Image (cartoon, rainbow, N blue to C red; front, side, top):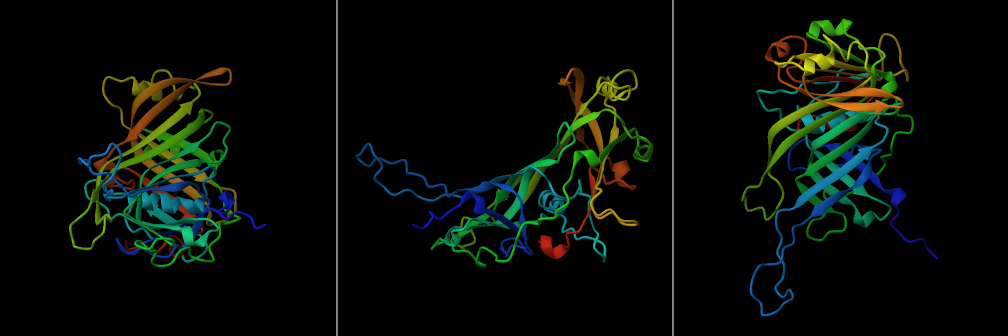
Length: 363
């Protein structure tokens, strides 16, 4: 007796950055993600009188709603570029001729960066039932570092503009999926909270001396953006999205701190929150992995810098101790943006992912 086809453990998530909106590409990398896509073709019964209490007339199609909620409990350095690229766009390519590649993201605030869009291949051992979703970008994602300093986890909300399938007659895959020969990296360097230090200061220049020690228990860094879907009547007989209109964007950092002198009391971070007027803060999250660390280049690191203002404080507890949960929102700082710091957010990732593995820039 043959086993029943369709094994959960044989599911795969494969992505490739597109060179142009509306043109799907073959996947270039398999990622260790968890989750499934959601393809809603908007089949709708017409609201008409048909002489029956049950449906009679055929339903009709509407604009498709294509999403994917994916997670990764142990985020890898080589997975960071797809998250930052699919959210911020900008056609970024890495610098570095050797093994170490440097990916820099400094998103614009007063202009709109071109979105980076992705083709997503999802399926299992049943090769004539693979999804091929095109023009994908991230509407939101977050990265969380847990109490105990374990791996950074991520949760992603993807939005796609088109859907096809290797098993569809009217919406066939093109190019054919799945792309063969892609496997998840078995020796990947993982991003750990144990490898991170936090720096907070009143100015960007003060960050170097602003490390907050023996205080941070956990973090959650969240990214959200509004995406307006544009569909035009071009006679192409398709419900595919023709363009995206980026809207409001938000970057939020939640930190759970012990009650040290840096965090509570006069002149502390909590004092900056409990102020009659907003107090600008600058924060840096600096990850440096010990995996393949070499001088003069560190193969795996992640550095985040952003201006921030505190909005909320909550009370927490860690074991037998009370804790302070401070949440800040990034803001566009035109003055900082004219110097070494990007206006709202700057991220520098050093890893071993080259441009071909992510997909060539120019989407």
